[in-house]
Every structure is written in C-alpha cells, then in structure tokens.
Amino acid sequence: MSYFFMTLPGDTNNVYAWDFGDGATGSTPLENHMYANTGSYVVCLTVTNAVDSCTNTHCDTLVVSSATWTNINSFTVGTSENTWPTELNAYPVPFQNTLQLEFEVAEEGTLHISLMDAQGRVVLNESADATRGIQRVSLNTESVSNGIYFVMVEANGTTTVRRVVK
Image (cartoon, rainbow, N blue to C red; front, top):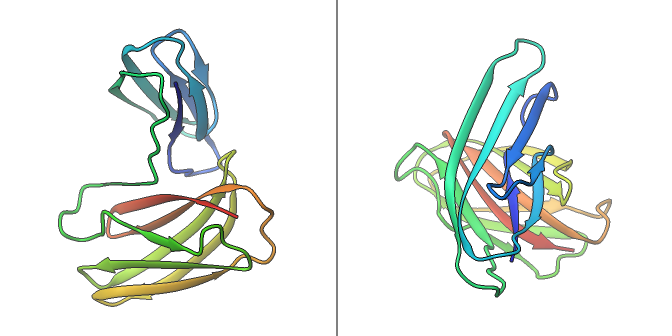
C-alpha cells in the first residue's frame, strides 16, 4: 500500500524528518512510502529550523487496512472553523496551459496559491484578494511540465490541497 505524505513547505532553512512507523524514514516535504503489511502505524514528522534550532514534532496514527489503492484527491488542514472550503475544485482534468480553481470562502482575506511538483518544489506561486463567496481563479500553467502536482490554497490559517495532473 503506497501513501503520499506532505507537509507545507516553509522556510528554506527547515529540515524535515519523517518516521513512517515501520522503520523507514524520509527527509523531504513530500514523501511517497510503501507499506509492506496492513496494520496500525504511528507516523511522525519532525521539522527543525537550521538557523534557530527550533524543532516541532507531530505524530498521528495511520491504519493500513487493505492492499488496494486509496485515492485522496483533496484535504484541508487548519484551525479556523467555517472559514475555508473542504473542497477545492480544479479543472480541466488533465489541465494544459490553464488550471481553473473554484472554491467558496466564508471570510474576506488574502489567498496564497502554490503549485508543487511531486518532489515538493514550488513551481508556481500567486496571491490574490478573496471576497466572501465563490472564488474562481485561473492559473497560467504554460511553463509547467506534464506530471502530477499538488495545488495548495492558503488563507485565514487554513490550507486546502488538491492533487492535479497535467
């Protein structure tokens, strides 16, 4: 069973240390890990800033219950309630020179939109002001190579991520 693990890339001075709970580790913001067996695994991510030595660790339990593919297209993380969508629509599938995003926001604020490749590198970054209601954003992706990407929309302390394909 293969899983993608992703943290939001932050300061370039951050060092990432994944522990997948089965003896395997990783060191990039975006990791793909294959579990050989079903079971319960405690997955931990430790992020250390190399400049000020500040360290933060978060652990969670992952239950691998079958050897079939689980497709997670979109997820949201954050602490703000009723602020951000749990669904981020992205089209067309696959996208070519333009990626259209559609989502609804409950509060005005500034959006930060990033497109990251499968290695966690940011290949496109944009900011925009959002008003309350349905938002439609077009990203010019002409310079982006074909592949699997993650589009990340951040605002008001919450981040929504969706897997997209070009």
